[in-house]
Amino acid sequence: MPRVLVVDDEPQLVRALTINLRARKYRVDCAHDGASALQLAATRHPDVIILDLGLPDMDGTEVIEGLRGWTRVPIIVLSARHASDEKVEALDAGADDYVTKPFGMDELLARLRAATRRASPSEEADLVVRTEAFTVDLTAKKVRRDGSDIRLTPTEWHVLEVLVRNTGRLVTQVQLLHEVWGPTYGTETNYLRVYMAQLRRKLEPDPAHPRHLVTEAGMGYRFER
Image (cartoon, rainbow, N blue to C red; front, side, top):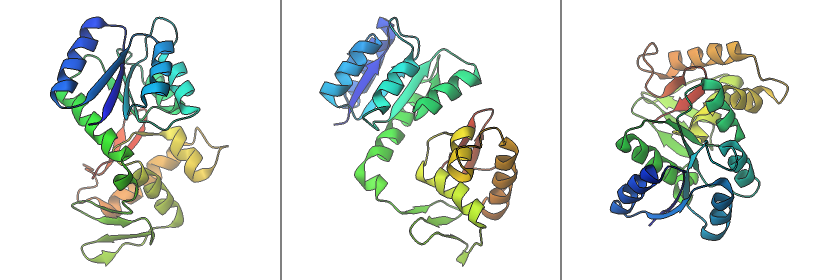
């Protein structure tokens, strides 16, 4: 059974999450502040962390940075902060996903399942990723659609590869620019718009309404199978 660490200072929300998670066979640990969260993460080794940003002793981004110094455990941020720059800050600090309060329990549980799958060894070893429209072979560096190889430029491939290796996870604009073009790039979002449009034309059945190469407005992009 996966172990989940819930970090939030709202007792009613923690209770609701605990009941729902345990009903679905998750093991649950709870922390009400950042210091306790870091200690529990080190001693209990959770498979996923659900983290509120507004903690009484420190900001949630500090907790993320503290965790990322030694673990890659998936972190789902749960916060009432709606501003896109605060979301981006948390994601750039190392969070894997972001759910805004108020939220639907079904949505959070779906994000939790996706995070657990991505963290499992079998998922990491999956080097051939299939969608209904196309297949990406990360080892051969090939994309096939309708039985034929699709020619991608080196940059198009690099953009796609970063997204596919983070399937289901939001990749921020800054992350993608750093990965593909290098650490000196961080504001050239027009590059991303151009290459995402090219990839959608080549891969999406309906480029105007993409199902697999999804834009998260103001934040980044997400690859969905």
